[in-house]
Amino acid sequence: MFDLIIANGTVIDGTGTPGIKSDVGIVGERIEAIDALVGAEADRVIDAKGLVVSPGFVDPHTHLVWAGSREHELEWKLQGRSYQDILADGGGILRTVRETRAADEEELREQSLKRLRNATRTGTTTIEVKSGYGLQREEELKQLRVARWLGEQGLAEVVSTFMGAHALPDDVNRAEYLEQLEQMLPEAAGLAEYCDVFCEEGAFTIKESRRLLEAAREVGMGLRIHADEFGDTGGGMLGAELKVTSADHLAGSTMETIEALRDAGVTGILLPGTPLALLSSEFAPARKMVAAGLPLALATDCNPNCYTESMQMVMQLAVFRMGLMPAEALTAATLNGALALGRSNRGAIAPGWRADLLVCDVPDYRHLTYHFGINHVETVVIGGQVVNA
Ligand code: NIG
Ligand code: FE
Image (cartoon, rainbow, N blue to C red; front, side):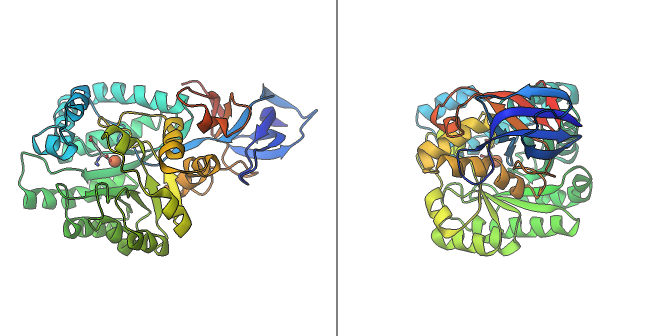
């Protein structure tokens, strides 16, 4: 007796083959059987004949909770201004900080929920969400409370990250803000599983990042780092030294850094939407990373500079601009995303695993990246429940 059977689909079995024809039986939150289930009883049967049944996408890097927007900055970038220049001028992250502070919690929930729905509709079943547009205690906590609330809406499951070290606020001096950040950690740890730092020129130095991440570890948080986005500035190496769960961006990482990350057991999270939105062609050297044996995950980086909730879009960019094979992109968007969030119960279709599944209207999983620019996801199942986002 099953709660749900997804019948007759082509099931992605994670071996890189185009999939196996099978039914999938679900009981409660879990996958119970991958087998011919003809005649089995079920409360509900979804016919997936001619369709692909894929693991749900895991998006392990987003800044989903913000207010306002920055479409005018895209025009500035098109006129030749750089991201760092816009930030140094009080735009970029700092502009979004002003708009996010000005929004009350209700307004912030509403704007963020829209994005979570978009993510879920396009197949994301687990999503990481960072703070970092508050840059002061109460405002950072406000964002983390909104992230927790989002996780209670029966849509994609939310994993929260505290990222007070996203930028230096323009109303506090450096030393003072670093001290405030350390003071925020115990409270942030009550709302967030991870701590992340933007370790880059114009943001936080290696020394500052190391100190904050070590303090976060002291209060029991897992660690992540934004590193080497614009060049190898030492952030990736710091991630390896601290054995962070994930080091993200890595567009400028050298071979030495890639190997150090691999040896430290770090998962690399690649965000191909970011160079796209920066009008840059400096995509992370994914082929070298695969050759070196660094596990790779893909993420949207969804934020007001790089505004997409779609993991399908990101997989397509990874294939078209970073040279990943369709099977590699799918693994990076599912199983390796789960790994990058420390979740070992999802990201694959196997008995006993969490029933986070997608029914996609494609004849073969390779069409997820070959046929680009539309939503292939027809049905989303999260924790055994069919979700209507
Ligand atoms: O991951 N690099 C820093 N943070 C974000 C961008 C946030 C923003 O521009 O608002 C990122 O790309
Ligand atoms: Fe980011």
